[in-house]
Image 1 (tube, rainbow, N blue to C red):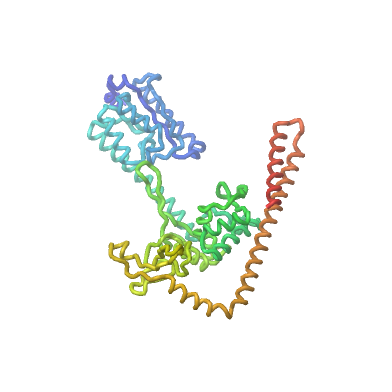
Image 2: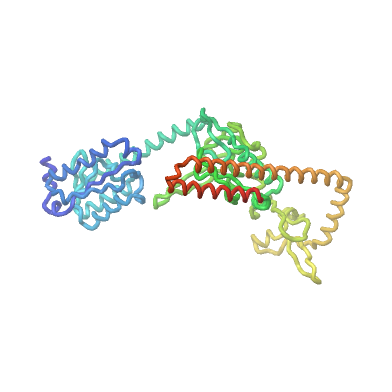
Length: 466
């Protein structure tokens, strides 16, 4: 204490003493109250060194915040600002890890304390960062604090990865799956949820694009389930969005696969994170047939291939979907000279749209003339003859098959609509029972339940009308 008193001068006592209090998580704040009490007790150390109570400022706004980065810690930023402005004579923390677990931010604080002649106090003693020995010791403590964080993180990640390799790590499930009482993954027992998801995959296999599937859902007036957050939370039914459909088609869990480590996360300078989706061969864990699914693994891979083909052309092997226009071979024609995909260009001649098949790869990449340009009318006539010769003997069989498929789709859509109506009726009956059971004198509750009942009745009317 004598050595500590020798480091404290009158100039230090004229300025404030700042006590920084922090716990890493809200759970630690609730369960590890003793650590918080020990941090607040450092005020007595400042008082013993000569600081009056009114000059001891406690900064505890970062309770429940991690010390890995300063971007989200308003209290730490305030402390750094006070030191920079020369208002701090002493900075207190129970240990270095309370102030910062990042060497860059810790050494920046040391630099500012050295320039402004600010002392640092922890549970072990008091230090003057402007003195070499004290600064060396503080630097070592900061390095050990950051290393401790990395060791704890690596240990935790190792345990999670080991559990994931056995398929036992509980991961939030997408819509259509739930955990049973034994923590096993099962299909959602709600049959309407299962039918909606299967309808999505069946229509994608038939139509070939996510946009077409969404249009089919909208045309049929069908709703799709979702949840606000993972877990057994209440279902919300609404229109199928494009991002939701793409997420489902890309998710291997619908093929019954357990997957861990599909993304790599990288820290940004501001403390945020950026995620990058990894190719399948770089996933940390992939266990096929780990639980029931809605499609097979082969169908999942086919869906991914179809989605890649639906993107804009990026390579020689890309097969683009057919777009608007009368050309028969758009999206599938290949150049007979170089093998690159050919694009379709149209010209108007005597008020008619004339297609041309043009190889533009060399033009786009090297600025050279097109490899070749082929008049599309003659090609389409020849292709039409070949198609007619091939399909005429099978026309009747194909027509019957198409009729059966259309009838099957109509019946499936009707089943989904009936399920929506039945769910709406159940929710009306549930809202009615809640309203009838409430005390009539409690008008606040009764009014809310009555409004909910009316909302359910309107939803039922809309479902029956559709």
